[in-house]
Amino acid sequence: MINRLAVWIATVGPIGRIKHAPGTFGSLAAIPLILLTKDSFEFSLGLFVFFLILGIWSSNCAARTLNLHDPSVVVIDEVCGMLVTFLFVPIHWVSLLIGFALFRFFDVLKPPPIRFLEKAPGGVGIVLDDIAAGLYSNLVLQLILLYA
Image (cartoon, rainbow, N blue to C red):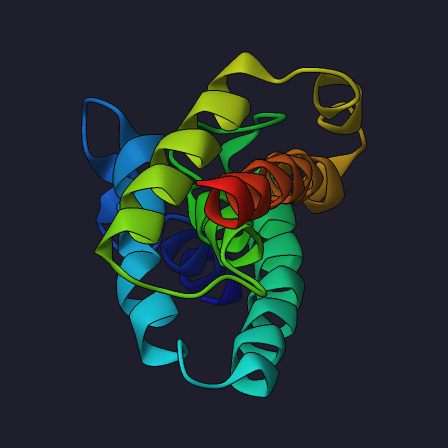
């Protein structure tokens, strides 16, 4: 029972089971959360910490249950990465579009040390590389918004 719940959380319900580009859809699933927390940094940070803990736990359980190191159906890590992308960022349609594109770029490209971080065991490795991609995205987004 607990493993089924963990897999459901890790896949963000049916989103991780989408046949093409589940990571992209997992990233899109974070946008309502970002919009919900856009007026409160404390709420944004709290939601990120909650999803970080939930993501590591559920991803770890899902990887064990599915007997895979980093199952492609697990997309809660994308939600965590997107939440990091938009910390300290003013939210409007332009920043959402640019931040989403940046996050997907860094999540797919995995520049150093992101590729190294995904090798960490279990749920930590599954989530940590997306947190790093979110940090890269946040930094670039901050610079774009500052100088554009």
